[in-house]
Every structure is written in C-alpha cells, then in structure tokens.
Amino acid sequence: EELEERLAELKNHISDEALQFGIKQRQLLNDLDAAKMEERHEGIADEKADATLDSKTERMEHQLRAAGVFRDRQAAAAKKVKEELVAVEGQVKELEGALQRCGCA
Image 1 (cartoon, rainbow, N blue to C red):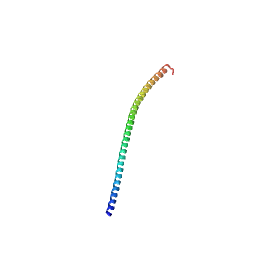
Image 2: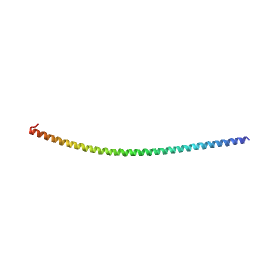
Image 3: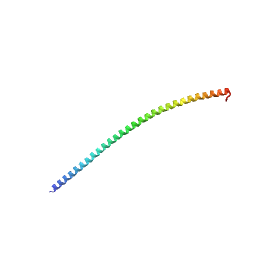
Image 4: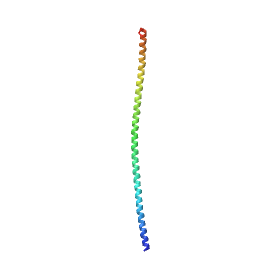
C-alpha cells in the first residue's frame, strides 16, 4: 500500500511536471512569435524609413539642381546689368564731354 501511495505521488508529480513543461513550452513559443512579429514590424519600419529617406533625397537633389539654375540665371542677369552700367557710364561721359564742348556745363 505504501508503494502504491508512492507510485501515485510519483504519477502526480510526473503529471504536474509534464503540465509545467507544456506551459513553459507554450510561453517559449509565444515569446518566439512575439520576437518574430517585432522583427517584422522593425523590418516594415526600416523599409518605410528607407522610402522616406529616398524621397527626401530626391527632393533635395531637385532643389539643388533648381538652385544651380537660379544661381546661373542670377549670374547672367548680374553680368548683363554690369555691361549695361558700363555702357551707360560711357554715354554719360560722352554727354558730359558734349556739354563741355558746347559750353553748356
């Protein structure tokens, strides 16, 4: 009878241990699933960040090209203004000379 009690206790212990093992195994699988899900979310976030960065890079490159065109046009306009200024200064000198020659000045 004592052996039967001991056998019953061992069977209960084995049953409890098997149940605990199953619980721990389920927890481990849940943790693995959670880690895989987190990894997937991080991958999606990384892809989104890459796409955003690519888009910003394209906009910056476009703005850089536009700024270069603007700079070139402004430089051309400044050159034209300088040339016109030289021409006007020449005309002013001619007029001053003409005024001196006629004695009007």
